[in-house]
Image (cartoon, rainbow, N blue to C red; front, side):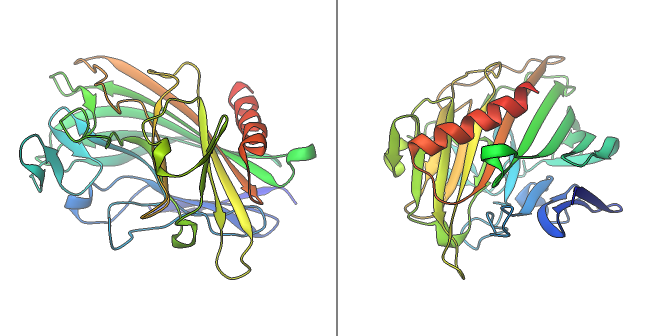
Length: 305
């Protein structure tokens, strides 16, 4: 049975395969302003139906499955929650922006690939225009030896329309040590806490945070059937700051994020344009670094195709 797409008008797009869901993409969120409302992917499933994401966890209600989440955009916060201020710590400021859907440019499906493309306009909390973005998501089924996988692709081209420079940074660029999160951020299910972070030549825990790598992944167990599943994120070779440092957590919660502005700001001048592309490979079964490399190659091939 081929892929299928269902559109809940003015709310979300759902992608399924053989009657089972793969993802839901909520493009018109309804959360409170302090959560920096932005489109997100949740729920996210493996092909066998294991849940691989978490929405609004009580510890960080602004974490939402997979989302394009930027904590430092000039003086604005498009991550959600409080902003890290040098010398003060985290402070809830009136700076939580929104990423607002404007129009779809493509919504299509073939037997093995679905595409969701739309234009967004980012607003500062005071309503001013910040960024115009063109975003494309894809879902591609794995074949052959990768038949137990599917790949989510994510592409964002952002154009600074604010009238001012908007350097892209993180809490680390503002003074908090080893807290360089920002970008395409995945929050995993509760059952993945304590799971294994994998990367080229690496399998371990939070000590991976801040390391540079072209890809990284997370392998854990799901509640219920107690089966394993894995996620591998591939950073496109053309991305700024490639290979990125990674923000990764497993001890307190499961989270993974290629963080291009982990320790250094990326300039984003008024009128400038910047593009980021990623592949996120969703796989049934646990993964070690060797299988992680195979999954990363699947994602690389999808990006190239």
